[in-house]
Length: 201
Ligand code: ADP
Ligand code: 5GP
Image 1 (cartoon, rainbow, N blue to C red):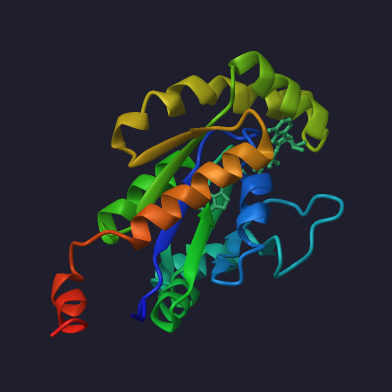
Image 2: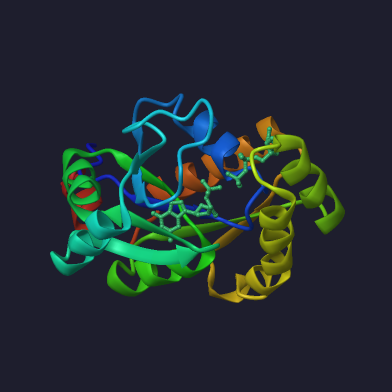
């Protein structure tokens, strides 16, 4: 029985929780594709244009908002980040699962415009461990890290709006849990009952 359309998975959670690492694991499965966001943030060392992000000026970003090119966008820690709409819609139609790594506010916007999206909230084992991860990543200044940590609890308080949660204590274990969620979602009956019955008539 073919699974015609792909699904939209939103992986969210406080900065430094490990969303990037988990998404990398999920992308080892060829049925999953990553949605590359657009941002006004400066590229970090090692980041590649078009693979990690599309790095654009504020003007270019605002122009894209005006043209309605985003599925969602948000101002996160003083920079703008947005999900280009076209790619998401095209890849889902082709049968791929599209993976979004976006912030908590953006995820809730996606749910409003695409209620069928599956929201997964990735949690750190503790806020102390979150600090260790942000400091260990060493990609942000002390000030930026404090800003990100300061937001973490406020973001966690919105977890009630989400479909699933996964605690990222060990990357492999957490990735397996997300993969299990994806497997379960593929086995859901709603919307497919007629198609399933037809296979046996
Ligand atoms: P996010 O995308 O949520 O901001 P990252 O994927 O960049 O987070 O991870 C933040 C830091 O934490 C990175 O240095 C990463 O290697 C580390 N990390 C991620 N998951 C784990 C884990 N389960 N245990 C220990 N360190 C982790
Ligand atoms: P970073 O600067 O660490 O790459 O990302 C900062 C935060 O912005 C992360 O929580 C990341 O998930 C989020 N983010 C990345 N892309 C998007 C996007 O397109 N939209 C929204 N709303 N958030 C994003």
